[in-house]
Amino acid sequence: MLRLGSQPLDTPAELSPVETDGAPGRPPTVLVVDDDRAVRDVLCAVLKEEGYPVRQASGADAALQLLRGDDLPLVLCDMKMPERDGLWLLEEVLRRHPHAAVVMLTGYGDTESAVDCLKRGAADYLLKPPRITELVRAIERAWSKSKLTSARARYHQGLARRVRERTAELTAALAGVAQSYSNTLVALVNALDAREHETSDHSQRVVRYTLAIARRMGICGQELEDIGRGALLHDIGKIGVPDSILLKPGPLTHAEWVEMRRHPEVGSRILEEIEFLRPAAEIVLAHQERWDGGGYPRRLRGEAIPLGARIFAIGDTLDAMTSDRPYRKAATFAQARLEISRCGGTQFDPRCVEAFRKIPDEELEALRQENAA
Image (cartoon, rainbow, N blue to C red; front, side, top):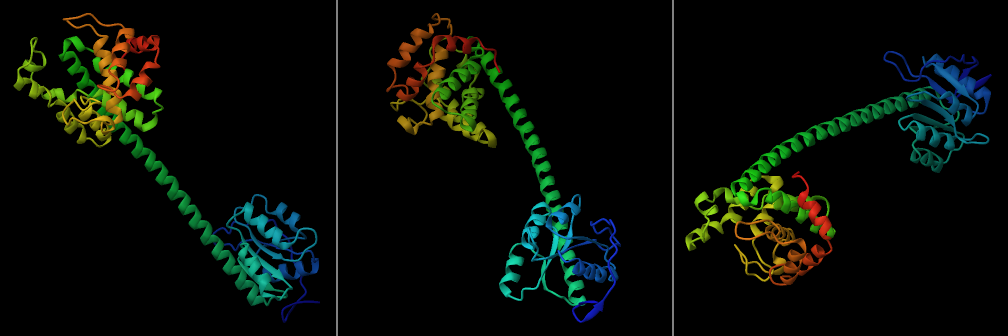
């Protein structure tokens, strides 16, 4: 007759294929793993007497076979077994089922073994032979902790999923708002271009030239996008310039010229009110500056001028030179290239000029003919 602690037991356990998910109102199934059949039978008998459905396995490999398909295993495992020991099984069970409850049994009485088991993820550690009360309490504690940990993990997973869903929804909504802003501003820019009859589609062409130069300089991502927006909206400030000045066929008076030169500041203030366009606002503000400091409105010099504005200056000049005007015919790209190169170091940033010079005429012509985005 075998004994468990000080209490005699001689009834072998009956095995049953009961689920291990611990359905409400039913205790979880305990898988008892020990290479000693007599020990397994005693442990199973005790647990069954306490109301726990049981299964048993003689070793680690057999245990893993039985645990296939289990969502939340509850395992009572001997530490010392031939071939694969209990520590190996402990780690393998937790690898496959991170929230499993594993209670280790050992005949070793040293603290080091207990600490090792707990460090590796065991829910509890009992010396053989355990008392019935100790065994049952250990099983109850392990199962309660396992259910709580699993429920918490499911909650966090659900919360994380919901956060991702809401983030995607908000991102889409914000993208829609940004697109609506962009569409409105593009329509406004097109209207401004149409207002100045001789520069129809000017802003769209300047965007394409500016982006081509920026890409040659290795600019990409958000910076490239901001430069494109700045180029598109560079003349947005002209919305405040009266037609009598903007469309005047003859030379401007000093007062009219002062009014015209205000459009970079007006445009910048408009864009600064819209958060996603603020990076573009600095390009709008500086798009009439010159490398040598002779521009306006702040007379910035050299690298004090935002890079996007320095690149834009070349794209803007290129379009102006290669477009027909009432007082002159359009220059060729070759002619424009020579003039822009000549002005490198005075009107334009030499580094930007060098990038521009690498773009072949055929590519520039294709950009000119491309339909407005």
